[in-house]
Image 1 (cartoon, rainbow, N blue to C red):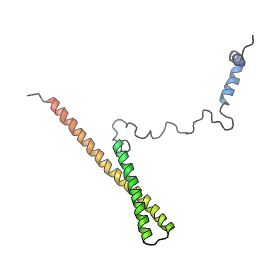
Image 2: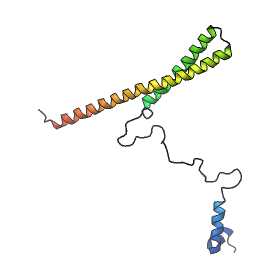
Image 3: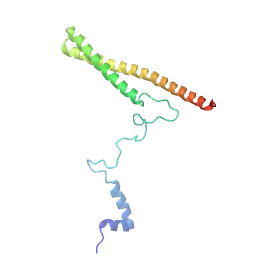
Length: 150
């Protein structure tokens, strides 16, 4: 009874380098990616959005679910509003359509960026106030727990 070629390579001590070479060449064919990673810095850099903050780190606006949703809605609304307003005013002033669209795009992008900055600034202040309120509540609860009951 003959053994399969794979078993012969496994039992033959000279076959180990051949098997290793075959395994290393497995992903080098044309059109195949093998086990190579697409990203060179895999696992480095920033974590996924909304990941748990490090110990002692302040919470970010991007990590807070209500803040992230609110900032997204504000950016979209102000960007579209600025686009529509600029387009309407440009067309009302008899500006050619191409120039009016160009002005509207610029106004939309500017509105988007300004709204993003303002929304993040407001939410940072809100998160700081929320943290202060939570700290005050914990401090009050700790003081109440230390007092004897009447």
